[in-house]
Length: 104
Image (cartoon, rainbow, N blue to C red; front, side, top):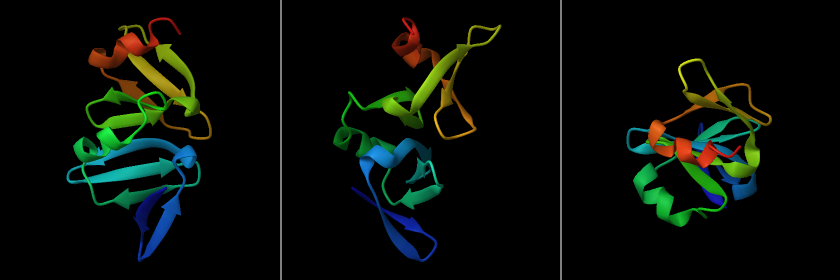
């Protein structure tokens, strides 16, 4: 479970509900199917606490729940973006982490 701030409330978010984590300076935005919340820790501090089988770092500031990835799409320039289940935005994959999606 993650304790995250949503306005003046503290919300308990199950790890399975997390779609992705996004670094925002000294904080991390926890994005779920229903919205987003902030946690007061850096992505660097959070990473060692995450299961690397479930959460994949795809960019310097983005860690995605692998179970929430719908597909990986390569554009004309060869850059990879992820389409997510239950979210409309697409996440860019850094060339450093592109190897995770070569076989997909």
